Amino acid sequence: MSPQRIALITGITGQDGSYLAELLLAQDYEVHGIVRRVAIEDPEHRLWRLRHLLPRIHLHAASLESFPSIFKVINTVQPDECYHLAAQSFVGYSFEDEFSTFQANINGTHHVLAALKECAPACRFYFAGSSEMFGKVASLPQDEQAPFHPRSAYGISKVAGFHLTQHYREAYGLQAWCGILYNHESPRRGLEFVTRKITFQAARIKLGLAHALPLGNLEARRDWGHAREYVEAMWRMLQQETPDDYVIATGETHTVREFAAAAFAHLDLDSRDYVTSDPAMVRPADVELLLGCAAKAERELGWRPRTMFRDLVVEMVEA
Ligand code: NDP
Ligand code: GDR
Image (cartoon, rainbow, N blue to C red; front, side, top):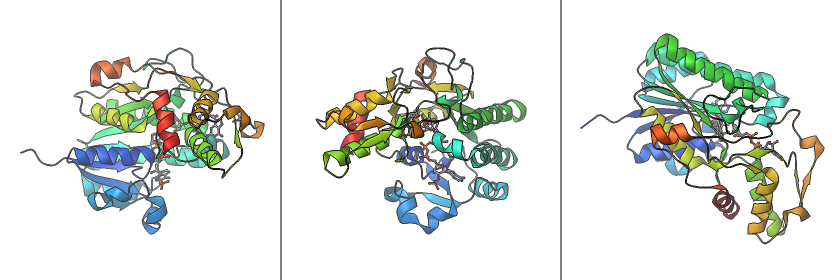
């Protein structure tokens, strides 16, 4: 019998971290996660996505900003696979604080890579790249060859993380994969993101608990898929022989306005009666159009999306 595989997830408390932990436990991995100390001190609130998994996972307090703390965890856990998901992931906030976004996302990624190189060089590594790296897109749909043109400090930080990951692969032989994942959502999505904000508020309006939904840019187009399926793509990448980069997307794009219309329609409401566009909520620079081509992932990983736009909206409204 082969020994139990050990996985380490940074960002385990987030949307993707919680689904990935479930997937790895189901495959009999020993699952470890890195969390900020505050999460351990305030488990009720900070660990809500993991509550049902807590008896089966191992949590370690560490800070992305501190190389010694990351080094210590990696050296102790000696993972076979490391999924680096922790990041300041809210694009909107990255306009308010570019500095902390770079700190967490660029230095944090560098710390994890450097620690792996030193104390677990055989470990397989996943970097959570993003369609925000394409930003102001030059081609439609975007595949792995599309040029990067980030439009936010967040996007810039992910381009830097992508290049750091490739550098550790090429210079030090680290088995490192980059996923370029398009927006993926679920009932576990944070309330600051537009899909959860819309579905949560539409449900409150239906229940008479709210009366309006101010949003920012309604014409932005996104390629939205389901988070549970996207973490499966991460895992499939790390089961490959040779490290590579993969776009993960549905190949469908919809506006924020369409998302809102579908959510309210599911509740027999007309979104035009409630949704407004507040110029103060429009980002200084937005990504207008994202549409991914995941043909390479389908060919090489056997991955394809199952949940498409309508079903995703309905699941989130129902939740
Ligand atoms: P979430 O925002 O739900 O989770 C982010 C995680 O990172 C949380 O566990 C959070 O911890 C942790 N984190 C944030 N800042 C720090 C820090 N300074 N130190 C330690 N931990 C930190 O993101 P998702 O699950 O949606 O995304 C996972 C990854 O995938 C991110 O890197 C994101 O940028 C990337 N990505 C996401 C996409 C999506 O559509 N969801 C698409 C493409 C890429 P805490 O709970 O303590 O805040
Ligand atoms: P995004 O997700 O920036 O694509 O990043 P978000 O849901 O925040 O925005 C999507 C689009 O909706 C527009 N928008 C609004 N957005 C928010 N949050 N709130 C609003 O009120 C609102 N009104 C309109 C935005 O301008 C944008 O165009 C997500 C994150 O998960 C990243 O970490 C990830 O890398 C990318 O997806 C792919």
